[in-house]
Image (cartoon, rainbow, N blue to C red; front, side, top):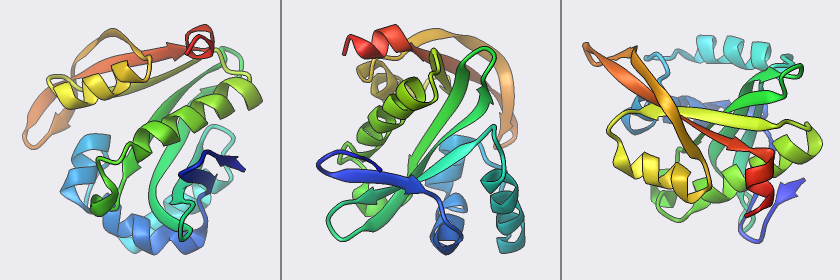
Length: 175
């Protein structure tokens, strides 16, 4: 099990889908992670069945050690074994748990898994340009600003730029 003194990560289970369905339809979550909404329960179940069998995506539930409470998800997708890269995403769905560094903890554990167990060399993520809070979050974790994908996503009736952040195994090892 991937854990520290506050949280642990475990494979997302079908029994978690009611909670994650609520979170994924919350604008505070879907606007950050870029998912298409609304998401029906049927669509979510089909998504879960596909991703649960995929070798290109791993989704973990972020759980508090105290009380074993599921508070969010963290994942690796676009896993490319040949190039040893993957994209990460994280969200803390339980709004009462945001701002407690749980996302940072989850990413550190996920990076240990990605670099140690999966033997990846680089993990990366994308965020909406201009979101300085998210930029500081990833930079504090050691991620480097790598570039901008111009007008990459269509959000709320307009095209938005996406910023790419990356973290290399060697950089993570130095932290």
